[in-house]
Length: 242
Image 1 (cartoon, rainbow, N blue to C red):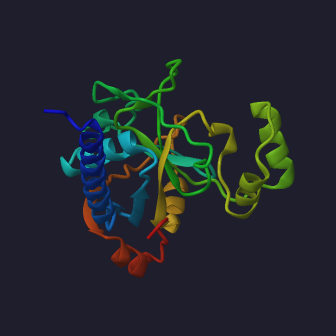
Image 2 (tube, rainbow, N blue to C red; image 1 turned 180 degrees about the horizontal axis):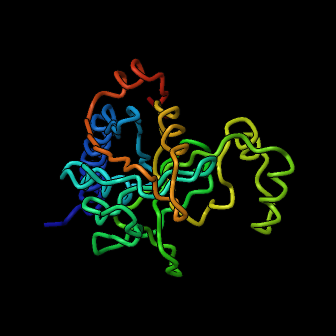
């Protein structure tokens, strides 16, 4: 009996196409929801969304938040007109005057750089040490707070990093603010969609010579998976390909 290889090949292609279509449909269904992150402190609530373009950082932050890892940790380093930083596990029971910033969870996350995702005001990014791979801390993060940059400041930044900043990004830095000297050096993985005023309040607190707030600023972090349409309705945020 002759084997009709053409028919077999056709059946395999049809089978693959069918299963691929089912998988794509499931992806579309999953994309109807996203994780809303809420960071609460005595100054109010900060609402964030994390980027699908940085899946390792997104999954890690959600995992830690769902475990309650960040609850009762401090914003241990704040610099007005720059950023606020937290996530050091050793800050939970830190005494006044303790130096903070070296705590970790025992692993790093591979850098996830994207030239279209940059350090504009309000993004959340991962802290790191000076490892040559620029891998991120497994837990520490910062939120960019710097306000709009003047043209001379942008020129100073370009001289500092040794290359021109893309014009599209310059426009954002002029209108919104940010820290361009950190671009492609630290992984940005999300953004504040409401509560930048709270970030400003935390950044403005009195601090010691090591930039630790003189009065502890504790956080709690909650993660909810909710429909994107609801997020858009509540916060006005427009998702890509919604």
